[in-house]
Length: 168
Image (cartoon, rainbow, N blue to C red):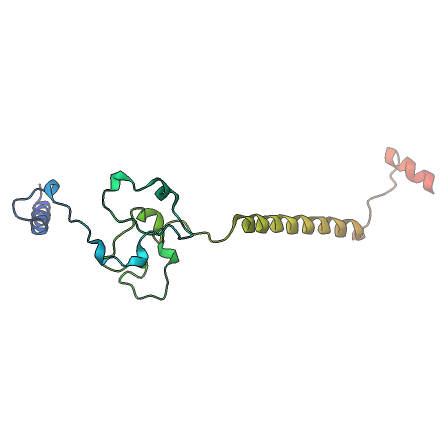
C-alpha cells in the first residue's frame, strides 16, 4: 500500500467519523422522521387533482410507512422563474422528495401534456402531407416534357428498327 493510498484512506475514515455519532456503526443510524408540518399544503396529494396518480386509488403503500403522499408534480411542471437553490432540478434545500422522484426529476422523460387524439391527428396530418407531396411530384414528373433527345436511332440489322421503318 503506497503512502498516498494510506493518506487517502485515513482521510476518508476521518471524514466518515465526523459525520456519524461517536460509537455508532453506519448501519445503526436512527432514521429521523419527516416533520410533515414543514411541507407546504399545496404539495400534498389531493384526490380532486386532475393528475390523480392511480396507485393511490388502492390506498397508501405499506412499504413506505409514514412517508408523506405528495402530488405527482415533476420538475418540468414547476415554474422556471421561481427562485430555487437548485435551479436545474427546481428544488430548494430541505424539500421533501417525492417517493417516485426518479420519474419526476428534471432528467426524466418529457411530460406530454394534451389529449391523445391531438397526437394522432398530428401524425395523420404529417403522413397525409407527405403522401400529397409525393403524388404531386409524380404528376409533375409525368406531365413535363423529356429534356433530352430520345434514343431512337436507326441502326442496320437492329430488330427494334422495324417498327420505325413502318412509320416512315
